[in-house]
Image (cartoon, rainbow, N blue to C red; front, side, top):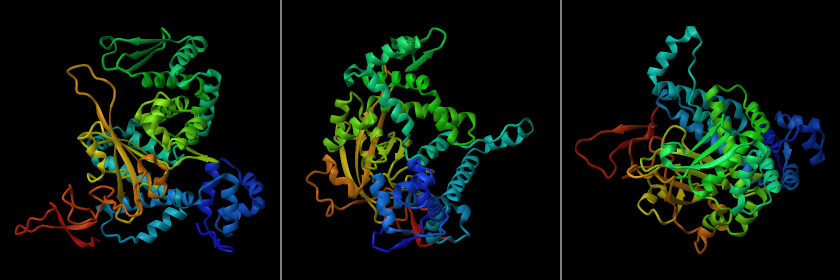
Length: 481
C-alpha cells in the first residue's frame, strides 16, 4: 500500500478483513488507532477513506506487513476467479480481468460464494452417477455434498492457516510438560495415562496391518504401529490429547465455520487436531525464534524439534501470529503421478483448485534425486517470482513387498523474502533467471511448451497435419469468447 502523506484509499472490505483476522471489534481497533468506532464503521462500509497515516499506525500497532495484507487475499481470490471464468461454461461471456480483480477486492464474500458454487458444479459434472443418485433419492432427504476436502481447504485458507486458540493451548501444554523435544513422547504418554487413563502401546505390524493409529475406546488404549517413526509417534499422541483436552476449542472453531455437513465437519476436526499436534511438537515462540536464527534451515529445525521434514515445512506455513509473523510460505505435497494431496498457503501463491501443477516446477524432479534438496526460482505468466525448495520424503515405512510411499514436498515464498533463507545464500536473486511455469496446463497460455499436457481452455486449439511442433498443442493467440 502507498504511504504518501495525505493519500486516501477506499479499502473497506480489506480493512474489515484485517480487523477480523486480528480478532478485534470495531471499538477495540478504534482505540488502538486513536479514532472513533463510528469512523471505523464508515471505513469498512467504504463511506470514508482511510489515510496512509492510519494504515501506517495500524502496521505499527499490530506489527503487520501491509504489503502482504494488501495483496494476499485479493491475489488468491483473483487467481481463483480467473480459473473459474476460464471454464468453457463462460465461453460466451467476456469478463475483463479488471472486473474480476475488482470483485476479488471489493466483494470477497461474493467471490467465496462463486468458488463454492463452481466447486459444487465441478463435482457434479465429474460425478454424474452420484448426481443421478442424489436426484433419485431427493424424496428421502438425501442431498448432494461438495468435496469435503476442498471445503476444509477453504476453511483453512479463510483462517490464513492460523488458529490462535490452538496455538495458546499447545503452548500451555508444553509449559506444563516442561520437557525437551527428545522427551516429548514419554511426557505425552504419561499425560494420556495419568490424566485420561489411556495407555499407549506400540504394536507389531501384523496386528495393526494397514492401520497406523487406532484408539480403542473400550480398553482405553492408544495403539500405534511399529512402522511409525519417532516423530510420527509423538505427533499421534499429541493429536489424541488435542481431541480430548481441546474439544471446546475445536468446537468453537468449527462453529465459526457455519453449517457443515458431517463429512467436512469430521475432516475439519481431524485437521484441527493435526494442527494442535504440530503446535505441541513445535511451540510457536520457540519454533519461530529458531527458524529465524537458523535462516529457516529445515533439516536443522527437524533435528532440534525432533520432527520430520514434512512436519517442519507444514509448520512453517502457520507462522502468522500478529506481532510475531514468519515468512509467508506456501506448501505443496504431490505424488509421482502428479496428484496433489496437500496444499497450504499463508502467502499469495495461486494454487489451482481444479487441476494439477506445472511439470516445469522442479518439485516433480525430486523423485529422480531422492536424497537431494532442490531449489529453484520460478516465474508465473504475470511476472510474479517465487523461490522454492523441494525434497522427496518417504512415509511411513512399508513392509515388503508393499511399495514404499513417496511424496514430494515443495515449499516456497515470494522472491522478496528469499534472502532470509539459508538456501538462497550466495545467489543473486535479482539476476537469477526464473523458470517460467504456469498454474497448470489448462490455465497456462505460454506457447511452445514441450511439457504441455493439454491446451489452455481459454484458447482455440489449432490442428494442422502438415506441422509437428515442439509442443503437442498449438492454439490461437486470441482469447476464445
